[in-house]
Image: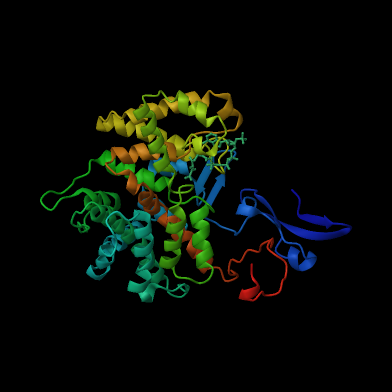
Length: 432
Ligand code: ACO
């Protein structure tokens, strides 16, 4: 493998060093290129830019590989649960029994939202977009817990543990409260004795006179869904968290920015689009063939939602896991969802179609996650909020890598300026 590279501009050569990751990923270090040559690298959308070194997640889009801290996603999905995987993502190792207990206790102790913070909800219209409310309420954690709103946990790891537990546990609680608020229902307080996912379902679905008790399959499916979303390399929201964190902004503020990035339909909102598409096919009485034909027209507005991925070019390993889990769950719950039948038909037809085969378009994680959430009783308006709860460990871990890096610098990309060249100010009376 090459150790050095060089860039020739006209007749001048600029030597560049090569970086190799632990899985053999190759990169050319261009940090000094502008200073040496006067040229910067242009990479709109950063599609070919490594913005950091990270020890968290390994992803090979061509081979369909996803690993957290070296552990294959398939093994974690089979043997672990969301909280254990969150610990792994954040702290780098699977917890032993003592660490796991301590982590769980911390999460349970910091689950509640204080009365003063609850008043923020009342400031929003009931039909406000949930992700907009979530982003601003999470940002307010920095105002409510100013002693934790620091980026310097280097000497004070206990405070990082506390901020981590608060972020994970409270974002989950805020998510459930948003649902109650939007539906005009009183909030349900978290229970100390319930595990993370069961507690979420309790806060969502219990009533004052009757506790919701989740069946194990339901809690397991939610665990799996959150686990599969725990981290995903330098996606838009994670890169946003790192960007904000690089200015030494605190954890809560950085996560709030990530929630804003996730709210976009091209990122966290795709599972909503999948459900809308499946519902439209169902309502039209179509077998899906008209949608497939339209998707093949090449128009962006007719794409087969839940198909294709910016990074995975063979298959999305999360989609394989979730597709099977979706079928198992519906079978166990005895749910007969016509949208699942449509999804399966679309999947089978598209995978045999030359258009999709030649473009390497396969189902992504969003293709089935909406059907699972529907089976759990979670409404479409909450889908992206659930994604945010699942992605929180990844955001925390990425933020930590930035905050703990003694050689880190503020993220500050450059640009190619294409505006007007210099011109003199024109007084108002002379402007046309
Ligand atoms: N349906 C039909 N055609 C598609 C689809 C699709 N879902 N996705 C890509 N194509 C076509 C494009 O039109 C293009 O065709 P062409 O070569 O004839 O011009 C070709 O496949 C390559 O597409 P790109 O736009 O280069 O793919 P890109 O990597 O930029 O986009 C994306 C990836 C945005 C995910 C795209 O596949 C898409 O829009 N999918 C549907 C939305 C979706 O499911 N998003 C969720 C992603 S997963 C996540 O965020 C958690």
